[in-house]
Amino acid sequence: MLIQEKSPLKTIIDLLMVTLGCGIYALGFVKINMANQLAEGGVTGITLILYHLVHLDPAISTLAINIPLIIIGYKFLGRRALIYTVWGTITLSAWIWLWQRLPFEINIHHDLFISGVLAGLVGGFGSGITYRFGGTTGGSDVVARILEKHRGISMGQSLLVFDAIVLTASLSYIDLRKMMYTLLASYVFAQVVNFTQEGAYTGHGFIIMSAHNQEIADTILAEMNRGVTFLKSQGAYSKQDGQALYCVVSAHEAQFLRDIVSHIDPKAFVSVFDVTNVSGEGFTYWLPGQKKNR
Image (cartoon, rainbow, N blue to C red; front, side, top):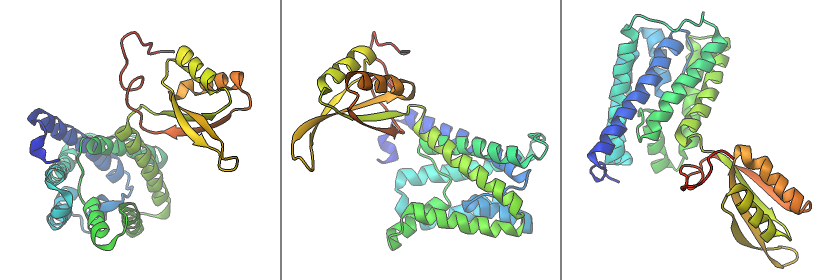
């Protein structure tokens, strides 16, 4: 979708939220990572290496590295992604410059464990907001897209290799102990990014196979007010046709659903799996008369 196909108000909101996300990420980068000498992956990690080895301001090196990459990879981004990426890169650089010059610190007494966790939380939250509203800070994402296009290497693989190379190079200015806390920050960062992007509407999916499917479905509808879907099934061995039930519930309702199935048919086959992103009736909106707390 081209950027002009979106309403001007939506585009403004997107760019404001990208600006906010970059500001939060830059706060953690400057006041936690830089202040406690923790490394980073990707292009941001390269700016830290340059900062410690040749004292180049990350606000400058962020632009110096990202802008050429964006120019090289513009045809792989699309117009909207290009505009949002340029905006994210510029605002990130501006925030890094600003946070370095504001005279305050996050006093955690240089505790590396707290630094690692906090760096992951703050950085992940800021990046999650940026990604959720269509933004990016450029850098390694652009490189990954080029490799995917021309070499057939998946973005996930190339990003992992790139981060590993940058983190290994970061041992030039930090010791192994601080690298371990950097890896802790990276893990927390990834979890918070996923949570921020996907939102809090997670749940559990149930596939239920029972001789009493109709009774189970009726009870779920009556007792839990959750939707249930009948799926056609066939036994691979018996070749007999049957039905399976599919239902998604919130995490705190999962045990209630297990109890319903166990009470009606203790021999039922039940498969439970995590659903990381749920939207629709009963999760992201409620119909009039529905109870929000069951």
